[in-house]
Amino acid sequence: ACSRLHLFCVFLFLIEWLQHVILTVSTWLLSALPMDGVVVNSNCQCVTTTSSIIPSRLFQRIEILPPGAHCRKTEILITKKDNKTVCIDPEAQWINKVLTRVMRR
Image 1 (cartoon, rainbow, N blue to C red):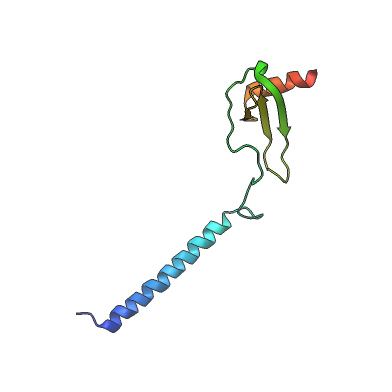
Image 2: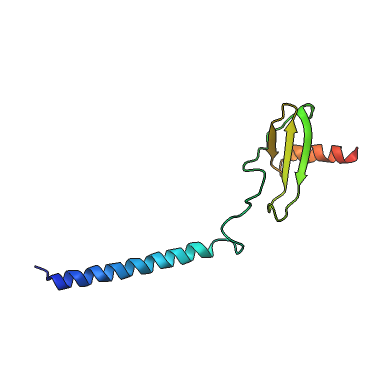
């Protein structure tokens, strides 16, 4: 039979060990965060993007938002004639062709 003192000492050891593990994991997780804080791209307009082709006849407006303090990535928003806004993946080949054509005008 184990003495109560022995069990208490084991319990204290486990508590100290868990505190160490939690502190180590917390430090590791915090070090993985960007230096400017936990919230990244908090003011980006686009939560998700699509690379699906949208016919230009449906375009009402194209907005290109360059990276800046509001958001770290370039955002391309197309407002369609039905007033729905779609965020386009800036890497999509078709949008680059459309933008090239628009810039030539």
